[in-house]
Image (cartoon, rainbow, N blue to C red; front, top):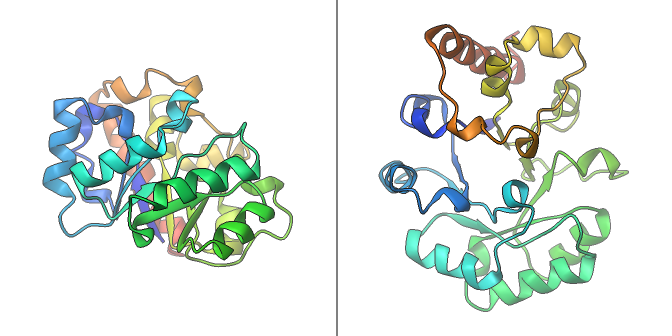
Length: 227
């Protein structure tokens, strides 16, 4: 399994050695330190620019995602989506984005099986699904190339074994003083970004930084079957 870890901005370079690919938060690209990090590190790595919905609760438009694609040349850009949109709106955003961005460079998120199959039928080559919606999708697709936006729990991972997942959970847990083992004992509770607004600007003291690294390593070892 390959991970992209969402980390506080001041520690982008420090934690880079743990990144298997880059999920880029588009609303942070105007920050010079964030933009510089992405431009320097994206070479040779799978990189995805997100549409900002999870952080801002309003997605970028297809026009904005197209602009970001041509400015930064990532591997993929995420098509606009919203928890409040119906299937037609999600599909229409993808079709509009496809008019200006090559189809092979677009990733679409689905909230239900209807969206999954329609987007596939419309030609979408890369699909993903949020931790928020996956538990509610009966007969969730078993394809391992679905991008998992957010990590739910190890039970889900063992069942589906996805190739890709982005999460900030190991570092968020460290900031709250939890180890991965303690998190598992408490049923893998979720710390949502919108409820931890200061997370991306957090400062980690040496003890917390050490715990964050330990959590990342433990997290990866469990997912890779070493624990």
